[in-house]
Amino acid sequence: MQNIAVIGAGTMGNGIAHVFAQNGFKVHLIDISQTSLDKAIATIGNNLDRMLAKDKITAQIKSETLAKITTFTSIAEGAKGMDLVVEAATENQNLKLDIFKQLDAICNAKTILATNTSSISITQIAAATERPEKVIGMHFMNPVPVMQLVEIIRGYNTSDETTKSVMSLSKKLGKTPTEVNDYPGFVANRILMPMINEAIETLYNNVAGVNEIDTVMKLGMAHPMGPLQLADFIGLDVCFSILNVMYNGFKNPKYAPCPLLVNMVMAGKLGVKSGEGFYDYSDSKKAEKVAAQFR
Image: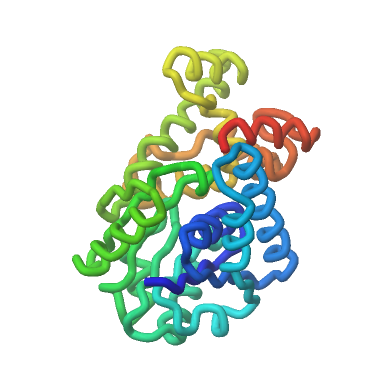
């Protein structure tokens, strides 16, 4: 596989495109918004500059990486003829099902269709296609250029051949692929989201304040970022969505979103993306400085 399409030019999509291009793959980055595509290319360029400043890459690698990426505003044009398509659109089930229906009609029979979903059933997404054996989950971690793990999720009908191909491909990206089965939240979010939710419950029950909760987890458990700050960077709306997927999938009240999280999402306080969550990010330079620590 040498030709890769990535659908979605947001944080995850541009990171995935960056990693594939830097490792020599031809990448088609697809988004309905040209503005989002332009912003994604600028972000990739800035991240490459950061790597260049740290002597992790050369100026030639930066130039070659950017040259490997072509942008498209049409799925039909961008996904046609690709060996692998990685969907990294918004974590919305209906949107993903619609995208996979389109991809199934556009792509040739050999194309593997992957989704970067962090919680939605791979089996359900695959059922929207006529090739469920070639549908798989590739859950990259944020920030993609830095984080080593890729959660490889097998749907009920995902073939051994597809799984082996994607595991091998992930290793070529310098990542560590880990195979898991298709259950709500998979492994990463099945463990992470209840921890974040419990931290929010702890705040909601007035056991301790925001800084105190995060300090305990950073210093006591050696976490690089406290759970409330991490929730802000993930996006409180994303945390809310993932918890609901697990709550609906398992019917277990331990996955029910904390009322404080529900209210914050309804109020539009989504974390870094909205400028306010558990912390204040109205100073964009300060927010960027914090985020840079984890790149």
